[in-house]
Amino acid sequence: MALVEMIMPKMGESIFECTVLSWLKNVGDKIESDEMILEVATDKIDTEIGSAFDGILKQILVQKGEIATIGKPICIIETDAENTPVSKDKQAAVTTPVEEKEIENVANELEKQSQLTSILIENAEPKANSLTGRFYSPLVQNIAKEENISSEELESIKGSGAENRVTKDDILAYVKQKKEKGIQAVSSPSIAIPAQPATYIPSSTDQIIEMDRMRKMIAERMVESKRISAHVTSFVETDMTNISLWRDKIKKKFHEETGENITFTPLLIDAVVKAIKDFPLINIQVDGEKIIRKGKINIGMAVALQSGNLIVPVVHEADSYSLIGLTKKVNELANRARANKLKADDLSDGTLTVSNIGSFGNIAGTPIIMQPQVSILAFGVIQKKVSVIETPHGDTIGIRQKMIISHSYDHRVVDGSLGGQFVKRVSDYLENFDLDRKLF
Image (cartoon, rainbow, N blue to C red; front, top):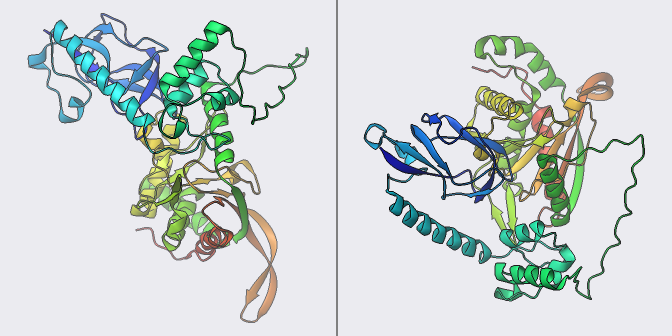
């Protein structure tokens, strides 16, 4: 028998740590390879982590509510090393069998690596993330949040890092000083402190509902996106008659031959992908004063959950799918999202987002951009309307199925010309949909 450390596996790009929500196994329990043993939460998703191999759970190193760092041990498992093969994809999630003394040495080395990661994060190329344009690293922001340090207090802290940035040592020293001297608040004299909201006095008819963790994250991200991006929204009315008639004609056969229901979402994404290829400068991100043109077209699709929250899984390389493949992928992601089965990678690397608000009966909206993207489309409800129809023999009046597309874009880098042309091109692809389009 041997003791083996299980390392917290990678959970997606830009995710360096997660919070342990619960352990699904207790010390002394027998576990099997790939059996789910704990549930964790990142800033993007809640998910379960499976065991890397068979054995007995001997020790839990990261308790419920504590932070687990990617690449560091989370538990120790006793296993028969000779009879427990570890596949290549699992070798990254475990260490080799070690004695107790060697475990301590490995832990120390991993601690050094973790500290190096923190240093690299703090010294990365800065991006302004405060009202005054000052940069704060994720580590500093997390400490400020834990210690209830306001934005005004952060602005007042003198930084010792590059370009006077606040380092971990700076903010920890401030926290210590504040606790020792009982400082109530410190603010820069050049920054006005906003008036505090009036204290809420509950009424007998009011119901107080605490935000859950996901709603808190959504709220923070929406406010942050409005602060970062100069939001502008353009609208286009689109004739969806052809595409609606085509879908009605083939949806029964489509289900019989593929086992899938074809909704409007894959058809909408298909048009968006084509328009992105025509206007690739809409498929960009902003990094400080740099514009990054993304090489892949990864479309995020907003999915409403039963809890009332919203999650945005990503169709990676959406331009590589046929319409049938795109339909299957869209349905798969939506189903896994509603069943809370998404992985961190399912939510990462989106380059443009779409939201089908028409499913809620909404005519139009002004969606908020998903950072660090610069563009988001909202598709309204499809309605029958009396319309003027142009024909070779003159104009006539008819009933057409119309939809409004709302396009919110970051006016820092997307001008009205590009933003307007792009959403019009999406509309053109939908309006000119081929009624004779073949599936197979």
